[in-house]
Structure formats: C-alpha cells, structure tokens
Amino acid sequence: MSWLFAPFGVSFVERALWGGLLVSGICALAGTWVVLRGMAFLGDAMSHGMLPGVATASLLGGNPLLGAALSASAMALGVTALSRSPRLSQDTGIGLLFAGMLGLGVIIVSRSQSFAVDLTAFLFGDVLAVRPRDLALLAAALGAAALVAAAGHRSFTALAFDPRKAATLGMRPRLAHALLLGLLTLAITASFHVVGTLLVFGLLIAPPAAAVLWARGVPMVMAGAALIGALSTVAGLLVSWHLRTAAGATIAVTAVGLFFVSALGARLRDRVRPAAIGAEGAVT
Image 1 (tube, rainbow, N blue to C red):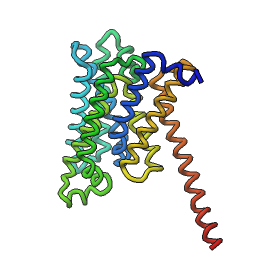
Image 2 (cartoon, rainbow, N blue to C red):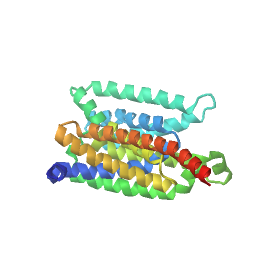
Image 3 (tube, rainbow, N blue to C red):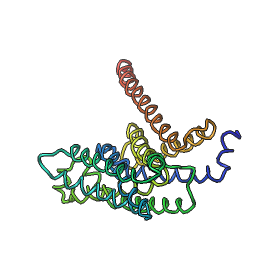
Image 4 (spheres, rainbow, N blue to C red):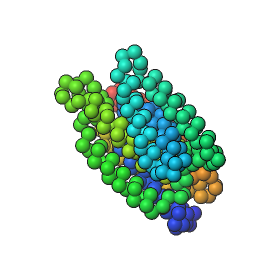
C-alpha cells in the first residue's frame, strides 16, 4: 500500500492535499448555488475575468490577490448592472464582459516579458507550490464562505427555486443575488492563486453537479460536493504523482470524470427503478 500513502509523506504533496481539500469545501458552498441556479457560464466568466486585475497588480508590483478581488468584484457589478436591462439577456451581458475582461487581461499581460509564464500560472496554477500561509488564507476563506452560506441559506433557496415567491415573501431577491455573487467572488478569488482558474472552475461545477443527481436537499448537495471534491483531490494527486502529470489539471479532470460516473449511475438507477416498481405491481 506504499503507492497509496507514500506520496502524501512528501511535504509539498501534503500541503497540496490540504489546499485541495480546503478549495473543495469553499467551492462546494458556492458551486452548489451556481449549479442549482444555472450560473455555470457566470462562474466561468468571473474566474477568467480576474485576469486584468491580476495582470495589472503583477506589472505594478502589487498584490495579485487584491487585483483579482477588485477585478472579480467589477465583473460581478457589471453583470448585475447589465442584467437590469430589459433588452439584454443575462447571458448576453456575461458574454460581453467575459470577452472584454479576458481580452483586456491578455493585452495587459502581453506588455510583460514573461507573458506565457504569467498566463499559464493564471490558468493552471501550481497546487504543488502551496505554502503554509496559503493554507491559512484558504481556511479563513472557508470560514467566511460558511458564514455567508449559512446567513443567506433561506434567501438563496428561495431565489434558486422561485424568485417571484422570494420577492413576495420580502426576501429581497436582488440583495440575495448580490450576496450570492459575493460568495462566488470569494470562492474564486481565494482559490485561484493557489490552484489556477482551471481547477477552481472544475471544482466549482463538477462536484455539485455530480452530487445534485443523488442528494435530496441543499445541505446534502453541499456535503456530497465537498466529498466528491476531496476524492478528486486525493485521486488526482495520486495519479499526478505516479504518472508525472500536471497536478491541478489532473484533479480537475478527475472531478469531471467523477461527474460522468455519477451521471451514468443516476441514469442506470432511473432505468432500474421503474422496472422494479412495475415488477412489484405485477406481483401484488
């Protein structure tokens, strides 16, 4: 069994494991609502829309994390503003901001001599380079995300399943939507600098999408998503270690693979269940 435990005896792999587990928890809390509300395109747009802020901060010698937070916040505000236009669909506004922010980011990064390196680090990150202070930041972000998710649970639930009823009940759906965007911004900003936008988006969408096929109730979806994300992290790091593949990308591919396994299992379940009910009816 040394092949299973030996990799995690190495300090940087152990830190990568903890980093992946913390990111899985953060993304489970935010990603559940992204999946339930059909906001996957928005999540993708926001994760890549951080590039201008990161690039500007890097060129000016500032903190890339602060730049990412400002850029993601600007993206969220822009989406909120454009979604109020009766002549534009939300997808159209998101698409416009996605293309504009990503293009602007590439232009800014192209001014740097290390263009390819910077862009690669932004997209793919380096989960094996996680430092102790990164783990502390992720732990704090997980705590903050848990508080936001708990405080906004009723409003988020009403917003996801019946926005009109949420307004009727006085739950202020616009405020709930803004708070949900804040939760999404927190998840993406806190995680990307450790694991890159590819892994963040993979863990933001795939585990909740896999869990929602089986779980009943939002808390169960979140718990299932966190568990699937953790399993993806462990399996991805093992595969990466033994096959010498990129760790972050391997974790993301593993998460997506687990979604397809879950979807196949759910499809088989749905086929077997009517047959079992029919057989039971025939016997009685």
